[in-house]
Image 1 (cartoon, rainbow, N blue to C red):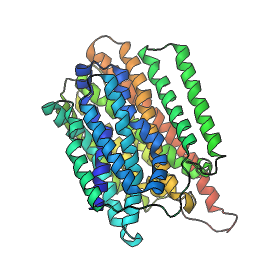
Image 2: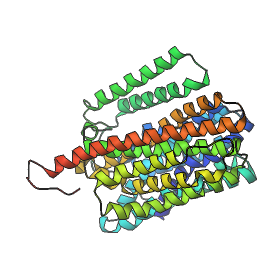
Image 3: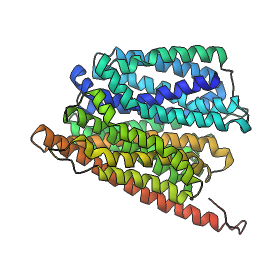
Image 4: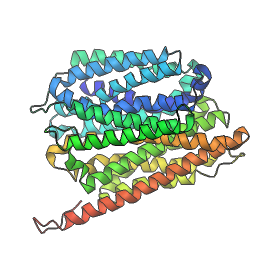
Length: 464
């Protein structure tokens, strides 16, 4: 029952990251949402997932993971009802932020709950099930969301969380034991505030580039605020005795290489998927369920990529598998470019499947690869930081690709020509970002590999 409670939580919170893509066109029609509003509907959920994840993990260690689970699930479920009842885009964005806060709490305590419930020799099976459920939650979003939106309206993608949330709360209240860490550290509230402020102002600046809501000077001011806040965050993390992010991780080339790859792969592909869904609905004229069905190649390839990644990861070093996974995402996004006014949906099958294969394979080996380059004491922080990196990637991917989507469409006449130009721009910029990340990851992991293979302390060659 413990594993069931955890799996229900992670399935819901990952599902809600991707299920919204099927409702974007309906949100435009029902709530009068423009492109910037749609970006915020997605990013308002990802922002607290990025800014609060590490802090929530520390709170769980100190206050009790069962308590945090119940708080997070109650918050997530209540916010889901609020999302369904939203009468405006602004209200939906605000409640999505609350929902993301609940999701951050649940994600932060889920793996520690499993670790505390099972002895080390029995954790392999539960953790494998946990990982499979996370993948299934992300993959099921477009198809399940499409079915619900088409038959029951956009509100149903949030209402579906209510019975699941109530069941999870009942199971957790009855069967989840309270656990805490034997050794805890203080909560880094200053670091949390600086990181969240930096991400919020940065995303606000990027999204505002194309919506015309604020002037160019305001965008520059927001961008400068983001840079200052993030610089102060790194400065503070290097000086506080209990950082939420140890600078040992930031300055480790190997860990940085894994982090960049995870952030870029998630950000570019999930960002592109949202705009591809919008293209299918607004330009090609498919309804939400038809759009979800056409995401099938991406979904199946992502699922198939996980066992492939594990298999390859056992035979090849991280310096090959990690950059290789991002390179597949880049190649897939690039292969999907070339849309024109007469394009049909089958044009995107190969590219989306290739990118999904890369993301699935990369996700399966990311955590193990990250742990190879950090001290044992930083293992929990490292895995949490990689999850945070994925959310930061999604934040920036959705924001940046929205700029590309809006600006490319504005220069065209005709719905199909404008849609084709917009999706080509999204895919091309996504491919470029993923390719650059693959190169950076390769360099960083190469440096880490060479430094470990010639360890001056042992003089021995160390396998990675």
